[in-house]
Length: 452
Image (cartoon, rainbow, N blue to C red; front, side, top):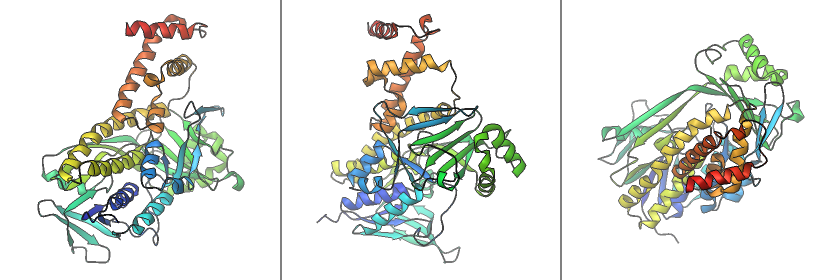
C-alpha cells in the first residue's frame, strides 16, 4: 500500500494535467484535480484545439512509466512518414526515420477521455469539473474558483498546501506569479489554423495513404492532415491572419473556392464539405510562451503549456508536457519528496530544454512548408551521408526529437552542428553538378580535416 504523502491540488485536467495526476497518485499523493470545462463524459466538445495529437518516444516513455502505453497504442494510428503533395499533383513520400520508426496519431478527445477516466479511477483522486480558476493567493495558499451554476460574483475558496498549474497556454495559475519577480515573453505567430476534416475513401473521400501524414506545402500557406482510425483525415489549414491570402481575405464561399482551386486543386471535389467547416470552425491563433521561474516557495509549480506554450509544427507539445510530468515525479522521488529541492531540480532540468524546443518548433514550420526544389538534392544527400558515417553526431533533428529522449537542448546543438557541416561541405564545387562517385570519401576527408 502506498504511503499517504498529502494532498496536491492540480489545476487543469487536459492531457498533461491528467497524466500528472496519475503519476502523483502512483507516488502516494492524494490529488484534487480541477478544470474549467464541464465533464467531457456528459458535455459537448470545445472547438479550437487541434483534434489530433502525435505520441512519439518521449510520450511513450511517460505512458510506459504508469503502465498505460499498450492501452493508448491500441487507440492510435501508426505513421511511417509524410506524403508531400506537390503543385502539379505529384506526390513525394518521406520516411520519418531511417529504420522505419513510427509516430502514433490519436484524436485528442479520445486520449483525453481515456486519461481523465484513468485519473478518476486512481485511489485518492477527485475530479472537480466546471471549476474556473479566478484567483490565486500564493502567500495564503488559496485557490479561488467560480463554480458553474453559482452567481458570477461568487468565489469558492479552496486552501492548498501544494499546487500544480497545468492549465494551458493562457494559464490562470501562471498569472499568480506576475505578483512576484517573474520574466514572461509571448510571441504570436502571424499564422493561425482552422480544422478541416476530409471524408474517408469509403465515403467518397480522396485516396490518401492512411499510414502517412499528408502535407500540402504552399509557401505562404500550408495544409496538413492526419489519418483517423475510421478512415477520415483531420486536417489543419494554416494561413496568415492578415494579408493575401489570409483568414481575413478568404471570407466568402467564392473566396474559399478560389483558394482551393489555386492551391489545392486535388481537393476541389470536396469543396462543399470543406467550405462548411471553414465557415463554421474558428481560426485558432498560435503562441510561443517562455517564462521563469516555473515554481514558487517549494509548493507551487507550472507544467506543460502553462510553463512553455509551443507552436505545433514538431508535434512535441504534448510529448514535452508528458516528459514534464515524468520528470516532476522522478525529481520528487529522487529528492525524498522534499518539494523545495525537487521543484528546483525539475526547473533546472526542464526549462532550458523547453526553451530549446520553442526555437526548434518555430524553425520547423519553414521546413514543413518548404516546397521541394531540385537544388535541395545535394543538401539532402549530404545529410543522409553524414547520418550514415556518424549517426551519433549527425542524426536528423526530427529523429532526435521524435525517436529518442535526448534533451531538446542537446538536439538543438546537434542540429546546429549538422546544418553548419552541410553548408561547409556544399562549398566543395564537386557537389554543384552530378553527384560525385567519391562523395563518401570527400565527406570523410572533410570531417577528418575538421577534427584535425
